[in-house]
Image 1 (cartoon, helix red, strand yellow):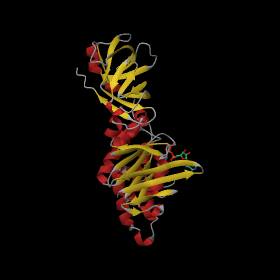
Image 2: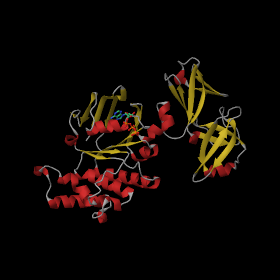
Image 3: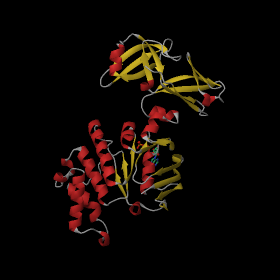
Image 4: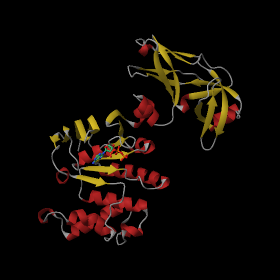
Length: 366
Ligand code: ATP
């Protein structure tokens, strides 16, 4: 089931929670709405569900206008952050609930209900717990029951609102892999809300990054991470180093560095910021190319395959971070207090007034 969200605006009093949002969710896609708290993710999900209605704009389900149709007509399953299981019912009864309350004409027989519930419980690997009560399960198991319950009514669309939000980091990581596999097995369209970048980038086919009721960028995790189109997305997704300066007629002046940015030829002495991911900073003992600058090593954390190195440039109190393979660190044999040359592999320059941006790829070689 594909979903089109067309120019949706939603206000609460004077406050615009959603500001002219348009996006397409493809059939069978696992789509993430990612953004900081209050950016409008849940409101959008509730509008897709039919729990909330837009002030203007439309929601189409497979080309059919569903803007005004209520939840029960949309064939959506819903999973919330807080386990909304019925405490007085067994796991089996919780999953069976949606089927048992169907109108008599469309309600499956007792045997069909039993078979479907047990097959869903086996899908979420909880069939051996069907007689237990929710209080006798762990948080992660309860959330899997919530998923099985939402799937019982065979929804065309699965909506998940911070489904793993209240679980600890390890369980979250496990469940997100599991959700991806489940989604692939079921060939269903899923939309999930999260404020956790790692979760969205690891699980989703595509991601919409929301901010202040608007969509900043829609793309695959790769596109969102490697080519953020706004400063907000750069800062929200992963670590980034910021260098401030100015751009004039296609040249960026960032401290002692001059960068050719032909895309910004129109700028005249415009304040600008250069964004560089920590893994795009390269360290060496010798000067590599024109924009290789001397910096001082402030700290080194070398746990795991990637070493995180904090550096400071002379005359600049800001700390910058470089991520290099631990093996490379061993090769370089750098210690805290040493001076090293730092060069950037990829830089993106944004004009602060939002009128332009430019990419620089600088193969440096080893
Ligand atoms: P979070 O991650 O914290 O859940 P979110 O991105 O999902 O945030 P929403 O829940 O969609 O954000 O809320 C967007 C904005 O709309 C917030 O500022 C919120 O306070 C406001 N809002 C949401 N629902 C209502 C409501 N029923 N009445 C008034 N304001 C609301």
